[in-house]
Image 1 (spheres, each protein chain N blue to C red):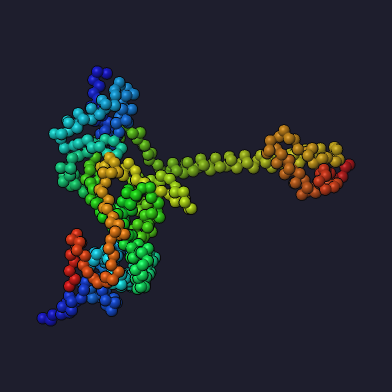
Image 2: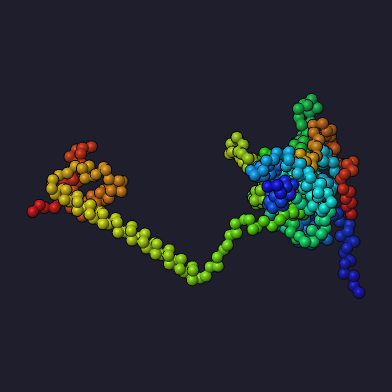
Length: 201
Length: 270
């Protein structure tokens, strides 16, 4: 038992596991055989990160725990190996996913009222199949619509730990505070510089 | 050599977008974009709000001060174009057209300065456009986020040897035939059991009942049943009684309403 090395054990576990492992999970697995504390686990992970500082792999912390991944610096090479593997997602899917992520829990009706189009069943199926969204309950209104929220797998996929690491949702300007001039019916170009300049010829 | 594209100058004078109603029908032909590409272009709109945002952005209009009449006209032009190209035109697009028309008609009504409660008819639409734009822009950002399969490459050791390998045996046609034979055999056993048991017991019960009745001449219906028997036994007895009735070997008699039912033999005693 003297050859037991916590750091190496954790490294092997993280590499072998199909999904990220949390501190609690690592502790539970290892403490069944060895006297360790959760702090030991965290220390070992830190030591592991230190070891990797000279390597092209890193310990990454995501929603479900830790995982070991290649550093982005070698992505150029990896993209050659894994070319054509990246699935592309439609704008409709990304919009639906974003609304669920920022406004959860939401019903299909909520998504529809923001997007102005009915929710595509195939998009919802894809999101559910990828385990990015799940039904977390039913709203207590007539019809009892299902409420959706995002999952830890969704955050894992985007390499995030918490929902608040998502990009900030742009602020909405309250239309009440805006000076709406009813008489203006001319095509006055807005002075918003962010708008793309499109010349009509 | 003859100039083939002498009409290009005419086309370049045309605006890229359809702004004037008169040009609607001609536009698909006059545009540089071939119909197939135009279809793809129109197909990319994610709904009426998306199309409206596009129209507003394209002309550098202030989203908070939309010239409803112009936008409505353009919007309807696009819808007509979609219809012409036989794109699947969802009801939402038509609903939005109706909403735009409603806004315009409300804006035509005189505004009473003293009624402060009255909101700009465009306010609700603007609110929806702004709300949609928030999620649309953030979804583009999320799309740019690093992600597994594209930007994260997970390092794993192959641990397949620890997972219970599911060895799929090589199935020959003969095996299939063999196992089907088994199935048939089993089914045969089942059906034999099923058919053997019942007719025998009902027949047997019929004889027993007849014997009982012939001994006593008149038997109460309930007496024929042995409550201690399981349901199946009771059912068999009942079936036997029905069978006997059908064969006109017994008769069921009831003296008065709700009275006791008696079973009587119809077989002449020797």
